[in-house]
Length: 394
Image (tube, rainbow, N blue to C red; front, side, top):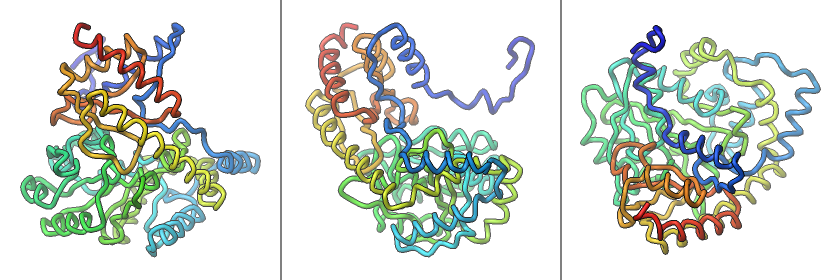
């Protein structure tokens, strides 16, 4: 393809934009024009970074800790993350196996670069987080999207792994809790999936970015049942450090040297100030802040879930984690993107169309992020109820 005489790569053209970003841009236009827009479209906690983390970052700046760190991350941060695994999961993870990355995206970049050759693919649940498949396209690989339904809890199963695995499959990427559905995989399910993937000779990669944000149940780490699995995690969600761009990857010991080489070449190191600030995440008083925020998310879920169901949205599976509701609008009629446009333009409520998350029944689903306080959620429900009355004639 040529634009203004310049030719750009096929891979860049093949990677789809977030459709929600067009809605977000329009929402921001409406907001700038003076309209009161309620943002339920973006997966970012509405809480600012916790004060102890900010203080730690400021102290690091004042002390001049602004240089590159080791490619695998600050030793003390990797040791602290290792201790966190011991406290939370009872696991002894060697700090050597932990690589600190620029966000969870940096961890995904390392894992895809290490594990997937051009022309090969990973199995992924559809619906799922879109960037996962786009990272694969970037390295000339692909995602084999596997349609999943409420009957499978919107998750891959051992049966689906066996059914969809083929000669070009080299692994599976799972997410627990998942975006956009908020569903979890139990310890027993993780164990069964691990066996199915290992039987095929593949790699198991699990996105645990929303660990900590669960309600009424604790999420199991895949490392409890499979020490050879690759785990992606992030400081963005539970730890509330979205703009600091920090995450980590736990890998098998024999993969570390190759991953370190990739990190050195791809990004040198994660942001130094963010790493020093993140040390404060694991202090007792900071964890207490995160836990109160988790309870607040649970209160929001417990309000919004029945409220939307009462309005005719079908939410077949109660999410146990993350901060999303994935809703079927088939009984309300129409296309999801047009549905989202209607409520943005008429009621100034922004939420995400399902086509951002895959292909399976995406036109009849939308995602709500309950990342606004209860008062704003109540206003959103009132506006949605009003907007439904004009939806069919819009």
